[in-house]
Image (cartoon, rainbow, N blue to C red; front, side, top):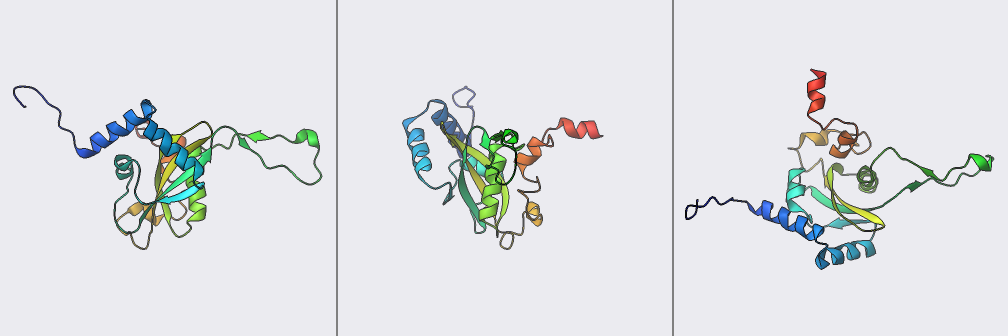
Length: 181
């Protein structure tokens, strides 16, 4: 209590989180510039430090050797099927199909294919515009980071073991445990 008033004490991460939320909600010019720069950059780009540090820390990121952050760009909207080739009836061709996984999970898989020696720990949303969604994927080197038990699983992004896939399968809710007991 300061001068008889209750004052909330917040750590640094809480302030950073509030600032990022405010930046996004108000469509701050800084936020727009960031997204424009991300759009002009490659579809997958390694980042020196996370843009949303509190979220990255919550999902298992540590600022030490063995952890890597990669920003991935995924197209919004319906996903196109490849054009079929060979002897098929044209009327059976359809362009769009629901891929059964979220944009975030799709981004995780793309990053996992590119960085084969690293394992996907988690990912989080960092921004979007009219055409793309941007996610930052946390990768860890299983040879350097021994204290993370999740890294014992090879190919986590493809076997549905990341947090995003567990959410899609309904395994992240607390009610699921109560139903099983």
